[in-house]
Image (cartoon, rainbow, N blue to C red; front, side):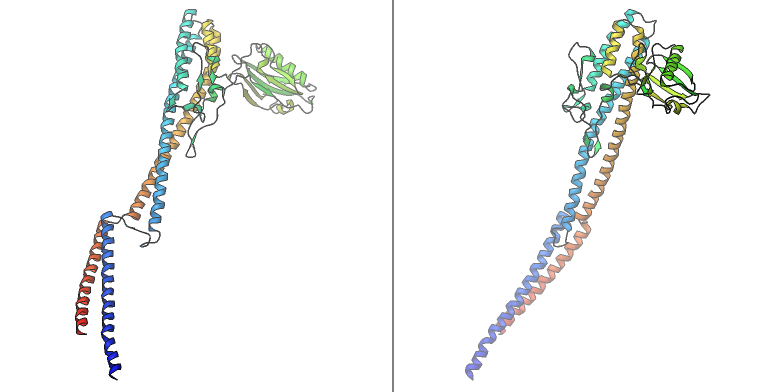
Length: 430
């Protein structure tokens, strides 16, 4: 009995000490957690970082990283578009200068085209032209950071290359290559080419009707015709046709009306069984954008154009490229030919239209990039504000959290001290 009692008595101190140890460890853990919380909130206040890890708010740092990635992408877009806008701005300024040069060349040609300008004056105009032309061709070769701005995608290609002392028509556009296309920055067109100035090919005005059905007119028909051969305008007026006329008869009557109006040569021919109008058939034909064929209904029989296989409308030719036009103008000056100077004026007008079109297009591109840069900036600003909400914690809130964590830690330490003191006494009492 004593042995059993002794066994029981011997186990009691061990059980008491085990309970005391558990209580002590529990209090120490509570203190550690409160200290960790205090340290975490203190770190949050010092760094002003709301989310220190993903465990306190699931996806907290993930949202922040996604937001920052979007901001970084917008920053890249801004850089690319701002760089493109700088290039476009320089192109726009350069085109403005090119337009002024062509305008100056045209103004001189207007004065030189007058019969009152003598041979010596024409030679002076020729010398002036060579200086202006050099400035023009230097301008089209404008570079930025080693890139030829008006070469589109082929930025390493010189826009216009001419050997020293050579005539303009011998120059080479894009080093013999065709325009490769415009540069694109952030899905927006970021360059323009000068094909309309350099790749244009002179042509006469040409219009071919359909084969009249039936081929022989069943009844009378009429048309009104105006012709510009590239230099002079001929108003042929109403041309009448009678029942029984075939296509050859119609062409004969049209050419007779052209001759009567002062034209030299033919203006119409039969082509594939239809009436073919072509200013290249006119004696002394000039291929340029002034060449025109204007077909209208006759005043007496306005509904009979279809019987002739014709439709009302205007067809024009095209002017030559800038280098050939300037070469023609220089030749006219050097040969002291006032009329030849006047003829080149049509080409110069076409060049002004082409450069004005480029200027307008650049203005539109410039405006689109300006709008996009502004929009990107505003969007990036909104995301940066959002990042502030995701990433930072207001100082007042942080201080409040730190104070609460500090109070909790103080309470835990006091409670732990009491438990430890009681546990010692309990240990000694046992």
